[in-house]
Length: 347
Image (cartoon, rainbow, N blue to C red; front, side, top):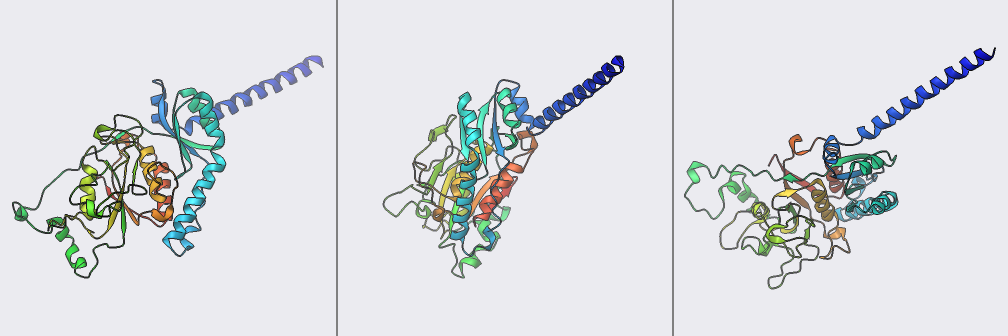
């Protein structure tokens, strides 16, 4: 009888150990499954830059029913910021405890941080964390310039050939040059005083400039290029942003019409450091577009948001863009605020 009891207890102990080990391995598999492979690879070398994407995300389903862009913008801004305030506290406390650098974002409920493998595992094991995604630097992929068609080469035109190709002059003839609209640019920055852009810059009144609510620099670390870090005025350390803004609104008022909507105004945000950005810098710029701030990054105001945003996107798997969840949520939230998002696919 005693041997039978001992055998029974031994059997139960084996079952207990088996299920304990199974649950442990299942838990380990679960946390690793929540971490993008690029984050694990980078952390294996010491530390990684990553985005902590929280499980709690704002419900913006009520936005489409609102009648005006102003109402949508205020609704989305208040919902997104409320969810971030209510849920990010424990994550930020842990990051403060270990003393790593981080930036809280609300455009999607997430935090950009830098840390080692142990921190990443602790964060991924949390029930309030849906995923940990890479925030690797992504180098800007230059567009391939084909130049003007053969028949246009060497000729000077008051209206550039590409503008004519898409029949923009016929729209202008109807009296619509984009007047009353505000275009938001997210790129390498902008030379706001360029002759083809200065009169369309929302921060320019013809004699003085006011960059509040009209410019934001999301480059806080790195080289900063010729602009430096946190540039208080619009600046372009690469040239691409100035070029694209010219395509949008450029007109030097002296007959050189290069932009689609020269009657529109523009505002801008720099998301790349000499042509290199990260999902966090892109997200910060898109966040700023929902509710632009003053030059001290304070007093966000959704009423200052643009009507449409333009950017050139190319982010293949070779650059770490293997999970669309983060930026997809960001773009969806911007659109919910009544802002049209237009990008050059593949640049």
